[in-house]
Image (tube, rainbow, N blue to C red; front, side):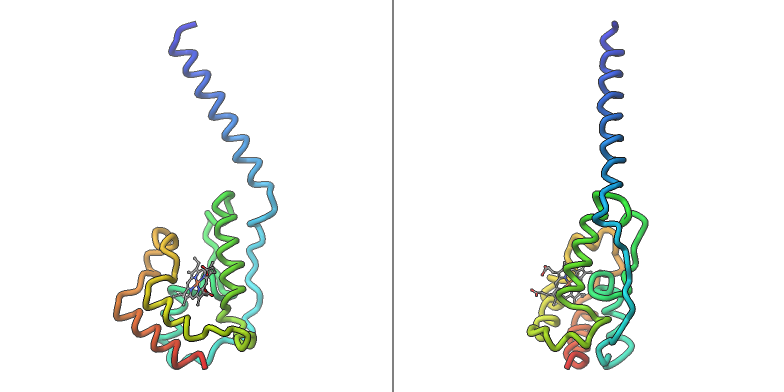
Length: 149
Ligand code: HEC
């Protein structure tokens, strides 16, 4: 057999194995639970602008109004998204503010905004609109301070 044909067959075999593996990943249940539970209680927003900024930069992981894009349904990306939303909602959920009294670190919320820790930098490539200017960060941090009492 010609060398080129051998390489081609090897390449096709590897591709087929990868494709089958990828298909199997889609049957793993974790990452498929894309629910948005009802919005129970939001913070007492000090202005519509504060809510807008929070919605733009935080709601996908810290509310029950997550926008689930098409790729969030495809493993293994779906696993990363599921983990972010599960952990994010657990730490801080703007849609279940009645539970926020348990949240000891309210002051930290503004801090993570100002320091650029949140949203996580891995979020920006797919959500450029979440990137806040310095002025918007100030505005959101101050607005959160006023709202989250
Ligand atoms: C892509 C998902 C995502 C977005 C968007 C996001 N967060 Fe988070 N956030 C998380 C995850 C996951 C955690 C828990 C793990 C951690 O602390 O890193 C978290 C934790 C936090 C915490 C708790 C930190 C702690 O140490 O307890 C605060 C406060 C917070 N986020 C605020 C925000 C604010 C404010 C925004 C919007 C400006 C935001 N987050 C946007 C995913 C996100």
